[in-house]
Image 1 (cartoon, rainbow, N blue to C red):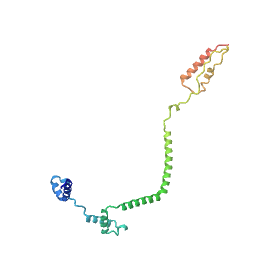
Image 2: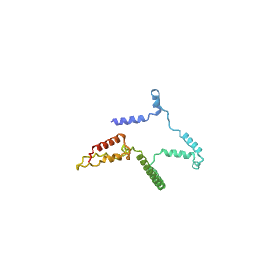
Image 3: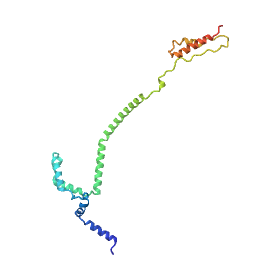
Image 4: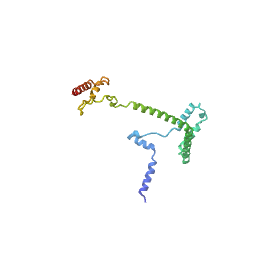
Length: 202
């Protein structure tokens, strides 16, 4: 009996037998952009171009022995897919080359890295010092504390004798003290004179 599977198989075989030229002829009038006449690379021209480049760099000793047959053989060998053994061999070669390069540059690389680290630490410390020097200072650091304290007013004596007022001596020291604001100085003088007037004679 003829099944759907047999029909699909026959359609596939027939479709694969349709040549590309027939498809291009059908689509050339309907959709010209999808039609192409590519028939593969011209291997003869490619080989000639490669040999031309070889002749241009023939001054190097490694290219003097290259012949056209060698180029053709290389191109043909590249068409074949790599086997698993060849892939593993190429990976092993790359790994060995990388290890060899690391062994060659490892001591020198470590010395250079240590020197760079020392230089970087020095410059980082200098940068930190510059940042700390440029930080904004507090406004209280500009003002200095006043040296004289507020004058003491003498209170009444309990023994009947007047006690010498400390404000008088303080007023006498105003001239030798650090100059203050004029308003504060006037207030000190007034307080001193007022306390002297309040003293009672013996």
